[in-house]
Image 1 (tube, helix red, strand yellow):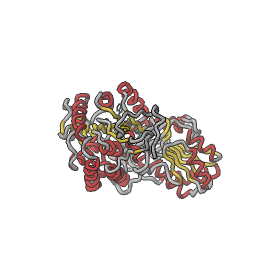
Image 2: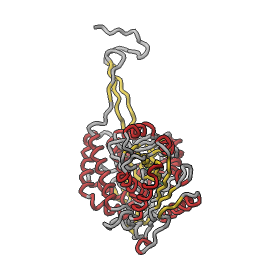
Image 3: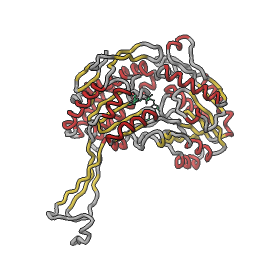
Image 4: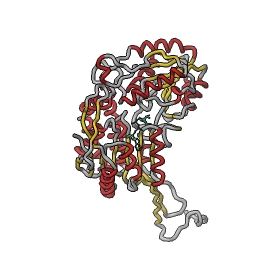
Length: 496
Ligand code: NAD
């Protein structure tokens, strides 16, 4: 049985209740974890609040040394964690290794921040006075994460929070709690002091909400659906908390008539059906210029029909299961909506029930053609292996269609025309833009996040991540020995 980690101790939920984590490929029970509640959150927040004054005073390069150790331990455990990740979340093993690798990359990057955490100095307007801006940690951070990147997404939040001197209470998604616990174990093994990182597993409605509303929690870093994000925002507002929200997406690939079609096809298949379409950056709309529409769609359907569904641990599998039965039903419901909206179903459109697949949650990769931009399947996040093809006349229309959704995470264009590429860079209104690559493949040293309903203006990863986890402190040192009044003593002359 797995346990919560609070104040450096592995403990059960105070209620003693547990819930099971299940392999979505075959229903196997992987383990039981605490079904925690408000009282467990209270304990964890108290531990994090108690550890904060000490942790913030540990010199940042020393905090970085612990993170370097975490990075090395993640490397040592990469294969074990990746295998477990495929079992608990379902993505194919190569992608599971990528998930863990992203955390390793983030660990090294943020460990390095221990010797930067750059502030700045600037000239001041009065003589014999010095000014500088420093980064201060904020306090206890509540980290709430989804199941689709069970190691990578927690790493985007926990590493920058810790290097900046904050302490953390982490609530992983209820579909992947064991990976959250295994991730925290690596920090323990690397020598992170007790109380600095705590984990509490359990439902969002109980554990998540208790964390968000706890007065001692100063920052909430949340990744999940837009609907839940809105609720998080409302709950955190009375406490005037810093809230960083990374939410849904409805990402598109644009393919222009002049594109390299082989390359575009590779990008489309990878972006739409990799991780079974369950990435926030997954491509769920294909915006195609009319000259190549038919050729591209014919070739795409042929490729999609060759994708092999199965357990992600098998070398023959291209596409794994979706996360749970609710997701499977939700995806199928959207397909029915697409049919009712008179989009043309070209392939897929059903739950896979052949042989071993019936034991898990598998959906046949699906492509709709003749989709209009305003249809629900072109507007709402489906979060599964369903791609909608929209035909357009030219670049201007493609960009307009791309931008006309409630989300703004990632977009991509395939073109050989440098002018079109630069117009797209200028006019695609998403947080991430790819030229001649699919909508997925972000690297951790650049800001990650989106516009409109994808978030509330914050970014994860890169140095941008530090904005969420630090407060600016401006410091003025007056060494003139007299009262100098900024903006008032304007006639102070500098003698040369
Ligand atoms: P979800 O919103 O259902 O859950 C996310 C987390 O929030 C879970 O830990 C859940 O337990 C918790 N939660 C749910 N309701 C809560 C509440 N009222 N208060 C506090 N916590 C609550 O999302 P999910 O199904 O786990 O993940 C899929 C969603 O995440 C998709 O919409 C996807 O686009 C989004 N996502 C976004 C990004 C990004 O960076 N923009 C990355 C990955 C996933």
